[in-house]
Length: 253
Image 1 (cartoon, rainbow, N blue to C red):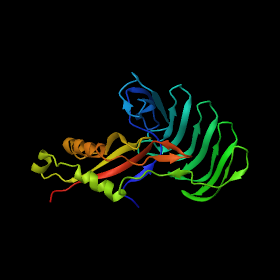
Image 2: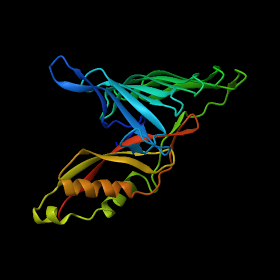
Image 3: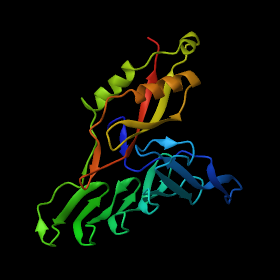
Image 4: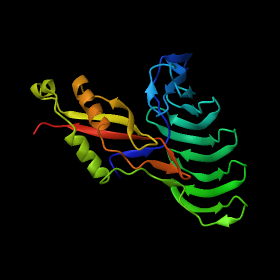
């Protein structure tokens, strides 16, 4: 398994726009989180100058449903998670055309596609019916706009980094300049970084999932921000935003 992994939904860090709820355990957790983005899918600090938004409704302290909206305000896609922040998809995932017509319907179990994936044309006619077992494609059929079967093609083409996963990790390492304070204190360890590959193939919304120190965290974030452009992910022929988690290691020779 690669040391980095693909996750195809959109962002999940808490913004100031929160509604709070009380859990059974007595802990206070955000019930609804609203996040705002510009036209390039870069997360904004507030609704000012926002192009579109995402809304996450939590069922508990970990799981919930995240919905991304078109600039018009109509829902674009919605995904259920057992853990929003990791994130781990679990349940139904839906997407719509801007006219409100259902585009895709699929299901996940423990972050793997399971069962039927259906894709529709904007007219509502069936375009694709694929089947998956624990994330693996098993069978499927594609249809033309006239409803007749056509040659089956892969639904998803995953993003690629120039040179592959090992080149990605190598470039991150090359982008790192060991912080002087960490060298002086002989600090070693790993920073886990969450980031997204946008529809243009560029890294966006780089955040620290698990930190080591303020300076090493900042260096790790910058190293990922400086990565080369990916070939973007596509689903049903359309580019989509995807999430990655990557380890950034700090070791003194």
